[in-house]
Length: 149
Picture (cartoon, rainbow, N blue to C red):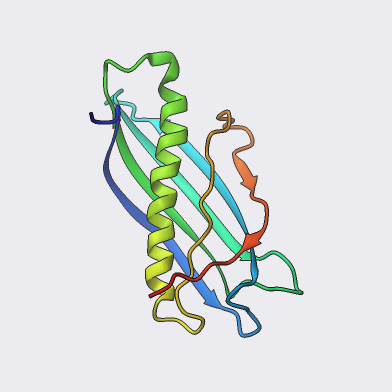
């Protein structure tokens, strides 16, 4: 069964990854996200979602190996049969989750050829009430993870 939210395409508008000389492969990373979403003016079933992800060391004692940011824009369609009163929540939760997954994979690919090796951002939970007024959320620091080969 297909999801009522379908990704038509996505593009990175910014991508920055910096290797930290003092960074540790198991260092603690802090991640913050900011999401914005809007319905297309001429095509009511189409939505644009912009996700900004920033990451870096959570503390100086055990610094993450990398810091950086990414901004990714996705274009989504919503099934017209989906309840209108639940559309914004669907777009926020699922759209942000899909774009965050794409950002995680892009950062993993870039760091695979970087100083400290592959770096995988932690998985995040976007199931929070959508709040366009305050969409930035800081995430609890976690240990940075390197993937095994």
